[in-house]
Length: 255
Length: 339
Image (spheres, rainbow over the protein chains, first blue to last red):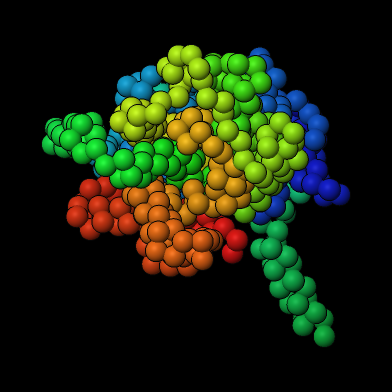
């Protein structure tokens, strides 16, 4: 469904994403992990059209979408959430989602958009009351609103950007289950970017690991979790501390 | 979502407004009312985009084009305003697209957008002044009196006729305002004014939506200029174009209330009554004083009453009317001209 080949993004002299290729199959949940600054969000921004790639191709359902304007990509069937929720505070919760339902589906009918809004709000568990204000939502509620907005655009592929940051453990489990439900019930393919490895590993079918803009590992969650390169970069700080502690112990024993 | 009661109130108010010139015939007061209605329409046109944070100081330019193109086509080519007005609106619309497209495509927003439009206003004023062989320059311009059909020339001596025309135009502006307010385009434009990337991620074509509202606003403003010219039968660059006129639009819309349909109308009542009072009270000694008063009032309003007189009044009357729009203050803040 999605095929990415040789994707590159440079900002001046800095290469944020370097020659990354991957594919996502219909109905799959692909996890995308990596430390801060590894290029996850940059890849998302290129997939959703917020950034134009420096080089490379992005084939979605057989069409080249690299460098297209965001609204055209969204209308073509890709929905996205933002890492930090970006609600429209001048609109009500319902209007936020109805807007996405209207413009995200080619501006066909207002009634269809409002139905899509009701369905999406119900799916993520937000009230469908038309007058409820965004200001009443907490961190978890805002994340749900992000998801509802993305769902209202009727995506075939959902790009979920670190949707669990700032949630407690119960909320995280609920959110992970919700993504799985979205895939199972609506048949939406998902790419999920996340810092928190544990919850992600439980839900995804496959994982891809990025470091410094390059793909360093890809495969089943169990296999990737055991990959020494992944352990080194993803848990880099821990590994260093361990090594430093071991070296200190050796020095003392020797001296 | 207009309730039965509000619809009835609008109906009654309109009936009273239509009946007025047949009951009350004082020509001076009718003249003031016509001016208020025409300027209300111009201010409403400005607020169509101003309310979404698209603060334009270029609308004096659109108004000037509406007035001058219509008058020039009539005097030089003998083209009836019925054709001249659509042409002048088309010219203003084309200019709006030419200036708007690069601004929106390359994301020139906030203060920078204000500056670009300010230049637009200045350029139109300069062009009118510089082509004085055709436009009469700063001395002003008068459409030729018709010897034939008054209807074809859109020239009427009768104040009642003009009052009814101005009332119709004004009502048209209010209807368009409500039409936009109830459309999905309002959601999109509110979203754009808060966060362009997030709006695009919801599928909104940001550039196109901004261009559409700018075009609508420019077309309506040009119409206001043309009607003003036909009514006054005398225009100068300073009364229908340029930065002063643009500033006056911003001032009136903000003082009256940017976010309610009748706000710009309240603004027009205040500005025109103020200008007339100063003119009658102090005569030529007070030329330019109104601008001074506008300046002081504008600062006070932006600080203390960002929703304008009517907006704040309605909020006070019905606090549960709507979900509060928390970012309304922000939209007004970039409207601070000359600050």
